[in-house]
Amino acid sequence: MENFDILDVVIVGGGPAGLSAGIFAMRAAMKTVLIERGLPGGQMAISKDIDNYPGFRETNGFDLTDRFLEHVKGYGLEIIQREVLSIDPGEETHSILLEEGRTLTTRALIIATGGVARRLNIPGETENLGRGVSYCATCDGFFFKNKKVVVVGGGDNALEEALYLSKIASRVYLIHRRSSFRANAMLQQQVTAAKNIEVILSTIVTGIDAGEEGVRAVRLRDIGEETEWNLETEGVFIFIGFSPLNQLVPHEVRKNRMGYVMTDEKCETNVPGIFVVGDLRQKYANQIVVAASDGCIAGLAAARHVELKKAGCREYYDTRNPETAVLMECA
Image 1 (cartoon, one colour):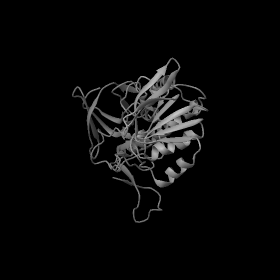
Image 2 (cartoon, one colour):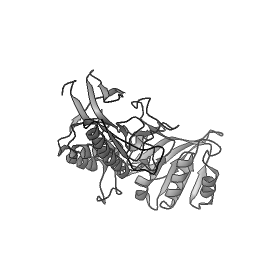
Image 3 (tube, one colour):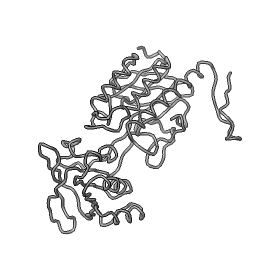
Image 4 (spheres, helix red, strand yellow):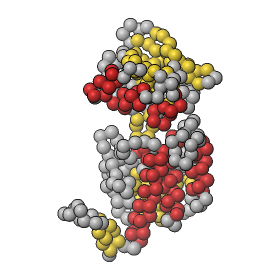
């Protein structure tokens, strides 16, 4: 592909949202390219067991990623494994600069770079991901039915996930490094009322021990007394924050205070022709099925945007009358 070619759709990011967007853009006969700096699949690819994706009662991240790839490649989608250095938005087209100096120009851009859970960076954490270490209770909680688990964190998300796990696990140990929680008062009251949640404050997790079957214990240190001990557990759920990977998002694109991109119902940002999907987008839940849904919506909306551009038309809302249907204006 030459630098002067204008593409219809470029997708940056090859997780479930990006791959889904690729399927629907190709189905709409758009000239589409997907760019992924690493292996396709994103967070989905490293998930050990998945049992909540519709149509797949039991699967894993590797196999589900393979299914996504097989599907999208069946439509002939070109996947470029390169690092994107920058994105430059324009009125008619948008430019994507790749690491080797190559520039792609596109009428519609879908950004699907996702996000990443913050880590404790302790021994045993990375090695046991999918073997008892998790960053998503709604994804993996089912596998710890009637087992003892540890939840690490002190914000709203940590307490919400601890309450969720308390309905599944036999015992939940909620560990926080400070002497009090940052979570809202109602959540704290609910945690206190839960009979199978044990709160351990002013304590940090210094390591995670595992055997052949996976996690078996965490190493703890009391900050005040400097005492250390081991706590037996089969699962460690870490909720110390989640960071959207928004470094490539142009500064013109509107974000919330947490750095997540704000979009409309079409997953389109305030910059016409730039769409954001998946964990990078501000929304209620981060699940594979939700990311795939985002990709579907953005793929269809991007195709519509391109078709209108080629016809010299645009769609818009009458801001004076919010209840009015979408209007169209053509040159």
